[in-house]
Length: 275
Image (cartoon, rainbow, N blue to C red; front, side, top):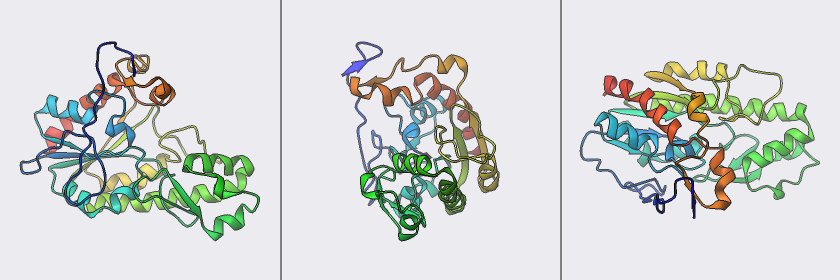
């Protein structure tokens, strides 16, 4: 195991489950018998490679109980298809919902794994007809598949991209309206949401999300907060993160402890106001 800060020790995520949900969350497991807040999101919310992710910092800084229900590589589907998690989040005083990418969702063109949403399962006959030259059995992950389709034909790929955007808007609205509690929609990225363009930029995260899509869903949340890491936080790179040497590239693409502190600071005052 390699660490940017020697002596930190092994990073234990204390994986746990809640109720009947089959999803594994980052622990330690929190008590749901007392008032609590919830964070829903992907790898950033889970806090992979980060000893104290922003949900933990929110709890220690605000004094509120915060239940981290972030999932690695999650899409919106992982929450919409889990009644137990939706029930837990709905009973929260406030639920923070991270803006997730549009690639990890089952749609008219392809299906993803119900719990590991980044896993590509199969293409539908429609997609196979549009991209007859592509062998879809070669793909295991959604991002790789989409990058290949765009490389084969950027024009035909835009048909797929538009389907993903429309599906994302509908499902994000569905998720927010199904949460019978106050909600904060959180944008967490290296840059603000981009304006819509003629060609999808698959180098940006959250993937395929733009300002029009955010505008279409933000009214369904109680609050909307954008967090773009400061230059100082970005310059920290992987400092303070814990990872195996083979995971260095993956870790470098994720927010480090300095960014998590900025997220917690941006959310704390609003969380206290709403709770």
